[in-house]
Every structure is written in C-alpha cells, then in structure tokens.
Image (cartoon, rainbow, N blue to C red; front, side):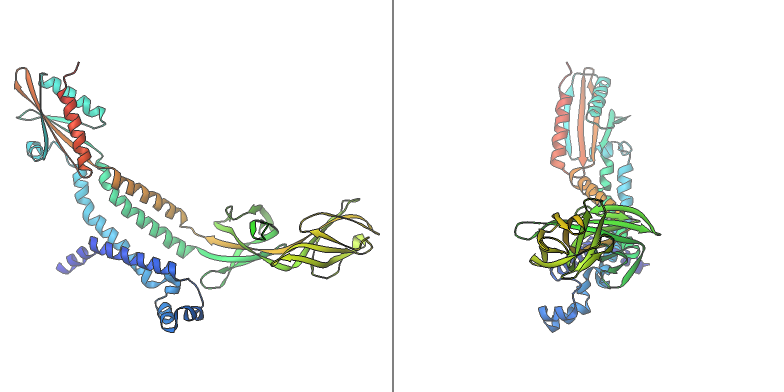
Length: 439
C-alpha cells in the first residue's frame, strides 16, 4: 500500500512535470539544431565519427520518432492525468462549497474587512447590498444568523478549472498527434507535366505508398524575378478516381488541394530537358501539344507539318527562350520567349506556336486524421492559459446587523485565489458604495 502511494505521489509531483518539460524542451532544441533524416555519412562528416555514432544510437537523427523522446511525452501525459485526478476533487469541493454553510466562523476568518455604519434599516441595507452585488455581476445569497443577516456572493468559481483545461489541452494535442502518427503519413511526389502517379514516397522510410486514386499534373507555370529567382509557381492538377476525372484545380504554395483526407502542398519544382510545343492552325482551329527533346524533330502528320527546337537560351537550369524550326517556313527558325506566341507561315498553312520548358511539380503529401484534435487542443490551451492567468475566483461575505433603532452596521470582507491587490481594491470600492447613503 505504501509503495502504491509512493508511486502515485511520484507521478503527481510538480517537480516531475517540470523535469519532463525541461527534458522535452532540450530534446526539441537538439532536434531543431541537428538536421534530421540525413545519411549516416553526412553526420560523420559534419560532427565526427564519435558524435555521429551517438546521434544514430540515440535516434537524434529522427528525434521526434525516437523511443526515448516519445517515452518522455508518455510520462508527461501520465503525470498530467495523475496530477489532475489527485488535485481536482479538492478544487471541486471549493467550487461547490456553500459560502453560508460555515456561518460566522468562515466569515470571521477573512483577513480583509471594512466596517460601515449607515442610517438605513437592516432590511433596507440588505436590499441595497444585494442590488449592488447583482450590479457587479455577483450572485448573492443571504441567511439569518444570531448576529444579523449574512450575505455571501461569489464570481468565477469555474476559473479554478483553468489549470485542468490546460492539462486536458495537452492531452488532446498528444492524442491528436498519436492518431496522426498511427493513421496518417507524410511523403512527397514528383509529377511531370502530362503524367499521372498513383504512389508517393514516404518521408522517413523512403517506401512507396500506393494511393487509391491517381493525380495528374496537367500543366505547371512559373514566374521569375528579373534576377532569375522564382517568384511564384502554380500546378494544375486533376484527381482521377476509378477512371473518372473527379476534380481539377490549381494549387499554389499557400493553396493546397485536399481529397479523401489527403492534402497535396505545392513544395518545389524541377525543370527537365524536354519542351512542350503548342501549335494551332489559325485557319481550321486545329490545335495540339507536343512533348519533344532538344534538337529533335517532331511531326504532325494530319497537318503535314514538321518542327523542332534547334537552340535555346537559359538562365541557370531554366530555359527563357527557344529557337523554333518549322519545315517549309520562311525563315525556318525564329526565337520565341517562353510562353509567348509566334506566328508562322509554312507551305502547309498559317500557324501560331508557343514553346515552354517542361517541368515536374514537387508536392508534399500529408494525411493527418488527428489534425483537428491538435487544433482543438491548441484552442483549449490558449483558453486555459487565459483563464489561469487573467481570471480569478472572488468571494464576498457581508454581515448586516442592527446596532440601534436607526443605525445599521455592515462588515464587508472577502477572498480571491489570485490577483488579490486588485480584488482588495474592488472590495474597497464596494464598501465605499455601501457607505454612501442613497439619494
């Protein structure tokens, strides 16, 4: 029995909570400073062989999946549960306590007291006091005693639950993270324009995970600053489920796509060595897109047309303009900026053509069924902290007794579990209002 009690008190200890929070904080800092998911040789080259071995043995390279880090989180969860179970009954008792039940013993035990004399009758003083307390949003109750009428009023008893709301919020966040870890995944995917994929690469294991639908990249557009740095880029994606195109939309860096609980985030891009040439017959309206490599001839048999890219200008890995060659055109080769439209006259007819480099869009793929629990936990955390730091439980006792036929004495006292100087100021204001005769 004593052993059980010792274990219980150990897990109910505030010192244990502070120790665990400190260790978790240190682990999180280390996980932030040391790059995660790098090859073993990378750690050896940066930190040396001994430190690299320690990093790998302690799973510091995958800090947030490390067994010891998750064990600390589990111990903190147990600590919060035991602390709450151990302390909440006493808190609930205080919240539900009848302030009149202790009578004059509870009243006389208060340290703050203001004595007021008025020329009102006892009944008038009681009625006026109850009215003032209701104006201050208290809920007063009164009881006859041998010494007079004892009035009790309180405000905010529920604010004592702020700390337990904080405890609950942390547990909800842990639960959401656990559900996300078990039932979710994080991965990435690289889709070339005009192609579709049905599998992603998992982040931590590198395994291929099949989806029950396909994602096709219809097009990828990118804008650059004058210095060649990418400004913004957009992918046009189509979801193909059971052979049907169920959704087509554009995604950007801050505009993801979610389907069946799986979210696709625009994360990166990769230029390829291929080009996409769009050709339209201005007379018939016939139009087609062709994917071709550099300096490779491509044909459009229906239009008896041949063309290709014979030269290109690039800024870094990105092509900014290309020289298009058309058989039977005069001149046979013309420069055109990426995405611009070129008018071409050939022996086969009049055409408009444009060319752009083919890209692959890089997407981060996330499924997290516990994310709403995490969001809800953070909301509870903020609410609990606000209650704990900025609100308090205030209680007032006022004794109204007749001293003479035309004189009534009021004694005002109270207590607050927090922000006592501010509460004492409120008690003084109430006493001042009670001491002034109504007009």
